[in-house]
Image: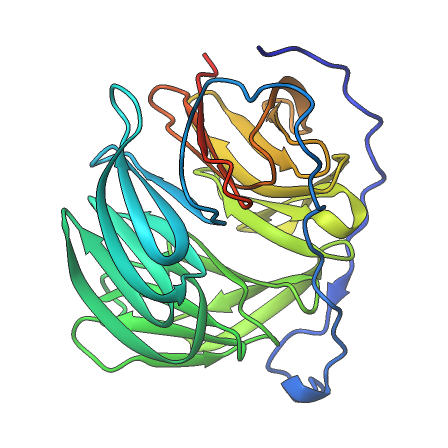
Length: 333
């Protein structure tokens, strides 16, 4: 069900450095100019059947795959649902949340959940901990730098704070951008996405401050960081994808992706970036070995593909429908 296609013309690289956060000329958060964050396209009814296997599932907008326990986690209204994946998708657990959680990511042999006003850790078949955070928790990322008061996670809030959760000390709050929409971590280096300012900003967690910021098009929506420290950021508003390195903190490429791109993930074994296209109910895979995206694969998806995750061991791609059309498992190898 896959097909190759020609690479579009590469866009001209543009990077705009913003005023470094924390300096005397930086205005208060409430005084900074903001934009209305971009939204996915309202997807039409699919013109062709979805590739692979589709199982019934409630509408949702969050997926994560844990390679240790080999389970998939899906966010739905009021719950995080776990699935075993070997031998086909099968529900194995369900954990109630306060309304719809905002993000789920792999952690250890389970998951971390940005659950509105707390960060929830799911380990095995139970909630290991559920720590309250001041503000609405939009994002979460594992953070296990042992010389930093035994931190275990970073939470990003709608109020723009980055909060370090620690096992041996009180929480540490870092004043950040207007909105800490997503937190990206690799090897102790941290960056935060701000959808309301269309930016990515360095975060010095030990120093308790933010650093340089870079503009991301006109409407960054989702981002992921790969094992090489490349931050892959989707600019839905302008139909493009950006790549930044976290160390050094700089732009690497800007590339057009049509049809309202939204969710993004990275297959570290196949070295493929996967991006969903909400206007056409598709997911496309791009090789990044040359330094620029090289289109390789494309598959039809369930309607409104607003979330994606990948099992790098098998290459199976998982896509979640935001309209209740199910969860899709696509073999890509």
